[in-house]
Amino acid sequence: MSSVKERYDHVVNEVALAAQRANRNPSDVRIVAVSKTVGVDVVGEAFASGITDFGENRSEVMAPKVAAFPEANWHFIGNIQARKVRDIVGVSCLIHSVDRLHIVERIAHQAEVLGMSQDILLEVNVSGEESKSGFKPDELPAALETCSKLPSLHVCGLMTMAPQADEQVVRATFRGLRELRDRQREHDWAGNVELNELSMGMSGDYPIAVEEGATIVRVGRSIFKEDFANL
Ligand SMILES: *Cc1c(COP(=O)(O)O)cnc(C)c1O
Image 1 (tube, rainbow, N blue to C red):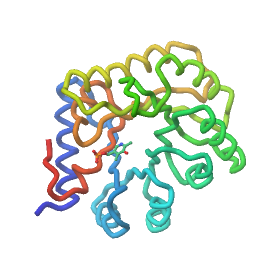
Image 2: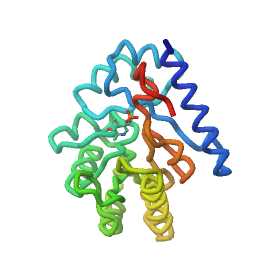
Image 3: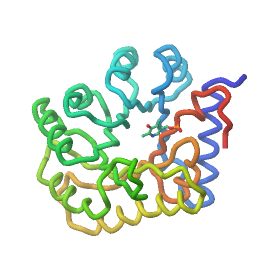
Image 4: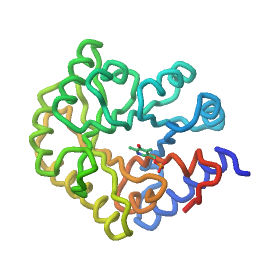
């Protein structure tokens, strides 16, 4: 039996190896431990072992964990319902999954109400699969334009999910997000649009994502699932 700490250390090591292969600095990649399937007790074990960044995809599930460990960094990575925006803004250090303009505006409004600036990522559907959420690549410039006029938002970068497919397709998806980001970064945006972060890579594909420039990987099963085959 392995512990959360041992499995996390394995992920840290795999990230470092992937970074080396790409001539990148491993410290430029943040690992978000996606704790959506485990309870407060396991989060406690993880936090005690030194894990600081956690990812959740439902506000009701996140709330008791935030209450128990307010010092941790809580990332929101799930589908955002308009009526749940209030439970996510302010609580989340970074909202990864902002996927439509209506939600952009809701988040901006709530951040304004709280008198704060909310860090967000725009989710992009790079692979074009019907089942995936996110802005289409050609919708991204207009979405960024909207964000640039909402000073209560800080757009830190982009997020995507790769299809379940062979390595070439996965790699092309991650590379596609990086290229989209690079292109948009050439534009002279307002100060609240920075695009330094690329949130991409999960348990099945995070080493490829790191090779392609991920600055944040979102890893759940490899850390929290006892019998999950590690890469
Ligand atoms: C669940 C989830 C993850 C983590 O997936 P694993 O395969 O368990 O590593 C990452 N990103 C998002 C958006 C998720 O919903």
